[in-house]
Amino acid sequence: MFIIAARKIFHLLLDIAETLVLSIVFFIFIWFFFFRPFQVNGLSMFPTFKDKEYVLTNIIGLHFSDPKLGDIVVFKSPTNNEEDFIKRVVALPRDRIMIKNGSVYLNGKILDESAYLKPDVKTYGGSFLREASEITVPQDQYFAMGDNRPYSSDSREWGFVPKDFIIGGSFFAYWPIEDMRTIKNPYSR
Image (cartoon, rainbow, N blue to C red; front, side, top):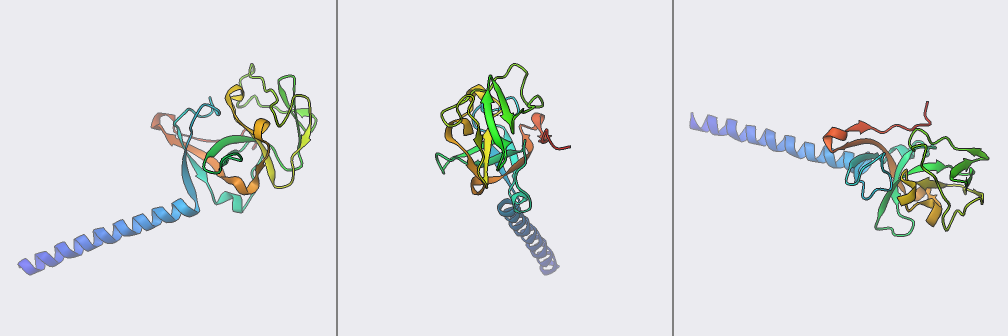
């Protein structure tokens, strides 16, 4: 009787161990090939994201499609490869971008940013994209800006974001739980 009970306990423990190992392998597979968590540090994307908020980033999506206007992407900092940034794509390869009188012009027209910027937010040029000068985004590069324009270090200061620096597109904010939500592109219909 004791031997039978010991065998049942052994098989139960073996089943639990197998389940744990498979769960860990599955989690690692998902982590490395599909999604990664990212913690927002700072206020450059406020009010879209708060400081210390966590978002999920889709890292496999870039293998199937390029970032689109309005996407929020996580990428390696062009000035420090040890640091990751999160910003909104405001110009795509071959787009012409200009900042003038507090507004962003894309291909000669004012970019409607009302879905993510308050009406009183003004955008001003920086050391890379100066006020009232138009530049064309090169192939395989993007122009990205934070939603909190006065407090964002972004493409206006340090230039374009190379496509191979982009880690992925953020699609879900999950922490803190009371702020959990999907992240939508305001230009997707």
